Amino acid sequence: MKIFSVVIENFRGIQSAKLVLPDHAVLIGDNNTGKSSVFEAIDLALGPDRLSRRPPVDEHDFYQGRYLPIPNPDAPEGAEPAPAPKITVEVTITNLSPEQEARFGANVAWLNTATGDFYREANPAGVDVAEIKAALRVTFVGQYDPDEDDFVGNSYFTRSLSEDDTPASFSKKDKQHCGFLFLRSLRTGSRALSLEHGSLLDIILRLKEIRPQMWEGTIGTLAAFDVASDPAIGISGVLESIDKALKKYVPREWGVKPHLKVSNLTREHLRKVITAFIATGAGDHAAPFFRQGTGTINMLVLAMLSQIAEDKQNVIFAMEEAETAIPPYAQKRIVHELRKLSAQSLFTSHSPYVLEEFSLDETVILSRSDNGQLSQSKIDLPESIKHKRYRQDFRTRFCEGLLSRRVLIAEGATEAASFPVVARRLAELNPATYVSLEALGVCVIDAGSETQIADLGALYKSLGKRTFALCDKQSDAAKAAIEAQVECLFMHDEKGMIFAPPAVSDYTPRYVISI
Image (tube, rainbow, N blue to C red; front, side, top):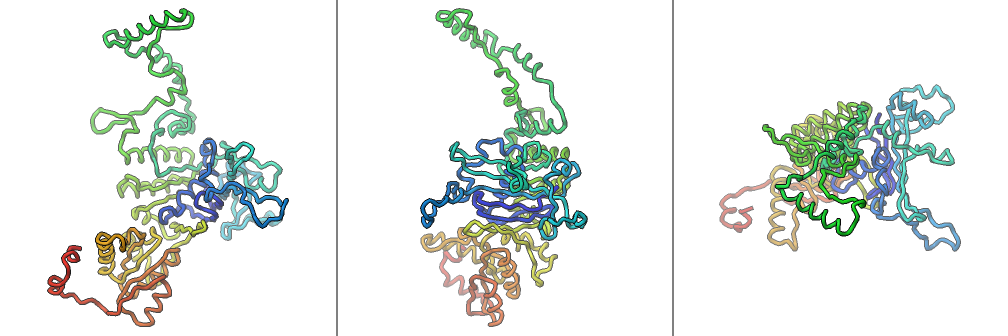
């Protein structure tokens, strides 16, 4: 099972988007591009526990906070008002298992995975083509209900929205058969090893069909245990004095004799208070699991989710920021383990150690326009940049540019190293006039030579980046080639660089030398 495509409208910062996803993918882009919103949108449609939250969406989940009908001042009097904006998320799932095809049979369509079009011909033999596969479409619809003055939302089989009088709900049981697991970037682990309904441990026990018959025995044991009943402690004496005071005002039949218990002795409360302890080191001391280090909690949550993936087999695993509080070797391990465990794994990341584990076809570059149009791009290397060089120089030359919105391509190492430092120093000396390149969101890329500037500019321009270039004096032909690929070219009138140490030390102001 895998997500073939997702179409999003009016969700958070995304007015519209259509993404086609490979079997395994990493979504990359600058902050606030919409990477997390894509995962959250998929979770609305496929997440089994997401819609248990009430309301499922709120004011800020709508694009620009617009959920009421937008009045049209030019509309004639008495005309029907424009419909209120709705959040819609349509997810198309392919590679269904035989069990899934049998369960969702009436709602299964046939998709040409080469073109993205659905097969609609009357000839049944046409679906035997290799590119045409069984697919399931699910749509989440969220909107404002003026009658209830609240927000409502639900997932439906997409086919039923247009073909049936009453849309067929894509229920929680249906979602559990699809198996979408989402690990957010804020992984506190506060409920991971608890027995609360919906916790990771509870899900694992349910998948293994384990129903611990422990509550009656536990409640009976705790009921027989009085907290601080020893008179030497002093608390029991205080409680007895309260009991005597109560008897002055109420008859015995009303119930008196206060005493302390460990909990309120109900199954639900015990589910919340029972906590797993984990050893903190080589010794015997143990602490609650949520008091472990951030990285340990992240790995604990991941390990439990991987256990769920192992038990469910045909699952889709989405994970934000795999690098959070995790060393590089563990980041790589996470990527490879999840790829093995899941039918499809989706990541977001800002770590070069994670990004380099994905091929060019598995790297999805996201960019968002000012009017909320989210688009995807793929990396097409120019002929002058061989794939071997791309892999070798990924961490030092390509990664930062892929993660930025603005790229300054410098001719060589001298310019790439000096310009950020000079800009930073000028911002310190005169912050009213100058700003550092980092504050402007500009990353500096070393092109390696002047002949590579145009090709690198074309590469980043094709990915939706704002590109700039910095170089020595060029020939008219080279200058024209560079200007065709960048937004602005900064070229000085001299060729090369002359280094004069005596002049630098004698005449350069001291604060410049200190740079």
